[in-house]
Amino acid sequence: MLSGDDRLKILKNFNLNIIFAFQRATIIRELWDSFIDLYNNIHNKSNTTGNQFHQKARQWLKLILTKSQDNINSSGFVRGLYRPMDITPYIYILVYHVPEFIEYIRILDFQDFLVVV
Image (tube, rainbow, N blue to C red; front, side, top):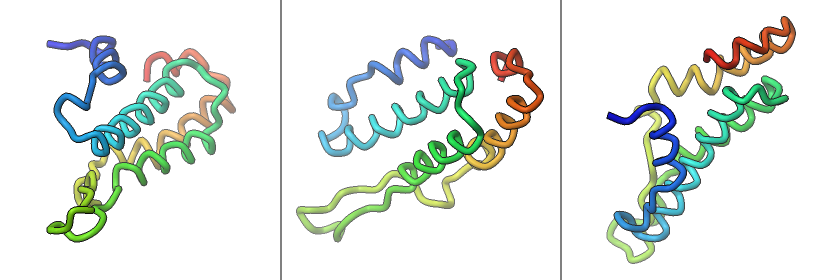
């Protein structure tokens, strides 16, 4: 079973082109890279403010909700990623509540807390 660091290595280094068409692999890679960036902002005691984190998280959510483009039967069809109904409470908390916690930690100067999250 993979641990946290091993999972991150796979997220960073897995060649998605092996199993997906180039365009789809590119979108999924962007999604994973954006998540890794959010993860690092939480764990690396960065100087990211809650508002900056919220903006990055909203961009990530927008990417998650990429809609399909064109008609499914056309040659230009590009499959989307996820639907709004696929958004879990965890994603909602990451986008809308973690930024609040980051601000509380910054205001109260509990920098060591970020390592635990």
